[in-house]
Length: 136
Image (cartoon, rainbow, N blue to C red; front, side, top):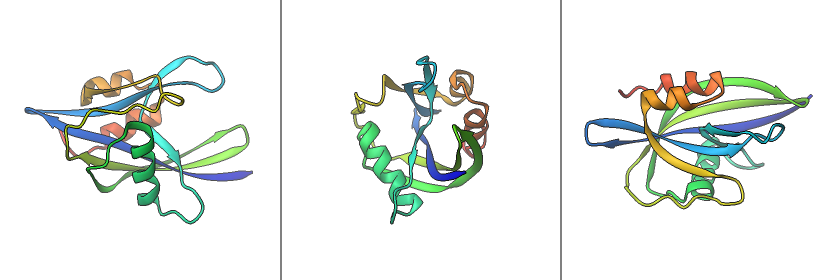
């Protein structure tokens, strides 16, 4: 079985007194159903997890001014014979810059309250990851 290391970002920011999470909408590869997801991507050869996170966040939503705080969750899943080992990080967004959504990979992106994010996410592992975010 092939192994792929993935990193996942729980991007968050404060909007007034409310913590909001950045979700991205993608088409599922097999069903082509649109799903709200956390931003996630592979770690390339020679990259650290932090470098991969910075690259993926910049590529997919165009944010540069971020603070990668800490790893908050790890999980694995099998997809077509590849074992994905996912490390999820709390990432604070330090700016209110407009999002630059990567059109060839994402359908949309948006900030939602933490409780709403848990409801919108499709995969249980991603719901669990957001629930582990140590901010209200």
